Length: 162
Image (spheres, rainbow, N blue to C red):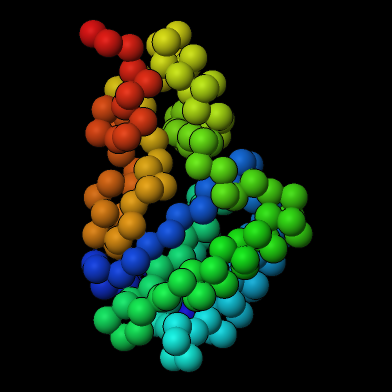
């Protein structure tokens, strides 16, 4: 089983953020299901060279090396269906892109974008707050732009105008 760290820089990446931390038992069960999903995952009938990771007990990261075989519409649908099954089985929210995750010390906090805007207005988060940019689409951008200070992310629009 490959990890995101072993994937080429041009690999496609999808990040699914949970509304809450996974328990240790959930991590093990999701990893087991993810490993099986990746083992069976195909693009146009060809096995995909892919990785599956759970990071910080909040994020599921799937990547695929498309130099070997491309992930087409059907295989991307399969990945989304897998994520929907994980959501349902564990009573999670993984597909809501309006959720923002940020670091508060060593803790990862997840809230709705509107709540995050209020936190910025109240100066409870600022330009140095570490946020997670789940819109990254390649391993290269994942490495450089996934976990960044708020001022370097798309979420920076919530900062009060100086």
